[in-house]
Length: 464
Image (cartoon, rainbow, N blue to C red; front, side, top):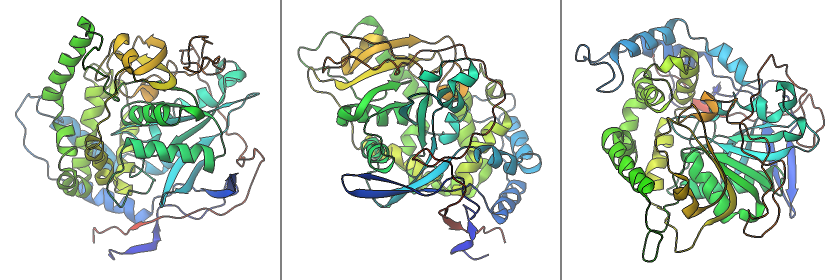
């Protein structure tokens, strides 16, 4: 087949739009926000199935389980299911229930879900995923946050939720130049929320890479932030120089645990942070190899007690792996590790992220810092120890990671201003039940039924 870009291989089919194109005008600059519908071409899916049928599995030491990496028996079964039973079109339809958009920023088209909250005064909230995740991780928590009244909560706690795909992840364009690190992404997110979507102030949440993005938003754009919430503390490194408060025993244990983890589990990060392009040739060419590289992390980093399907179904896992495959973004996604290692962020003496912060600490997160570690770099107003869950918190525990009502704290922000009552990071015992689709609305809040969708071309499949 042809190797060039082709309109016939468009990832986004032109279909009747659910939203009209929207324009936000800030300071005389108008930015366009275009809707789209996910549609992977049939030939791309046929090529995927063909490649799966041609998988050349490696040998493995009998009885070694997952000790050497992805388990051969499990991966063989997963690949078989992927080829014969996995229904991408059903997953695609589920994803298309949400309102998807692309919008131009800094020469890139960035993808996001944007769901309006159902309540008297929804707070704008941007949630950022990490690796090997994507926007799909947030879709389980999305209805809790946008429509809490439907799940037994208070409609006053609703959020306008924005879930972008990191540049080079999923449906967002990859960077074509060096330097796409978490600090640059934070600048893009600030533009997305303020200039493109028209929110003068907003809240931010993230874990993993998303925690680094969220932290920099709270540092560099605090004047536009109500607050930030984290499920991991990856950045910044606190000041530990002369006259710093001595490390507590718990903080030293954290440093020791991180060093041990890097030795035992950090091989993936070392290669992604040094030679991601070399890795990409194999993963971009072999769907089985891609699944092996990604699924092992979902098993190791989640609260699954060694059984990955205790937390995620095969369909859950393969939806994310398939998104990486059809968009060919494993190379650009892993490249962010290298970019981030080139721009380490260390705080100065007495320096903190100025935005008020909250933290939800899950028991199977990669690292579990004590509160005093977080308070070295953040104005930490809320700290929650969660009973279960791991690295993929929004996907593993959507009913627990609920951002509903920030307790007002007179001593919170550095400015001394009271925090808004809506912005809180506490779990609620909400119970999900059937959710019906809401009317499509433009960014102005009016219903719409027509518009023009942007298309993005991808290379035609090459199995023949």
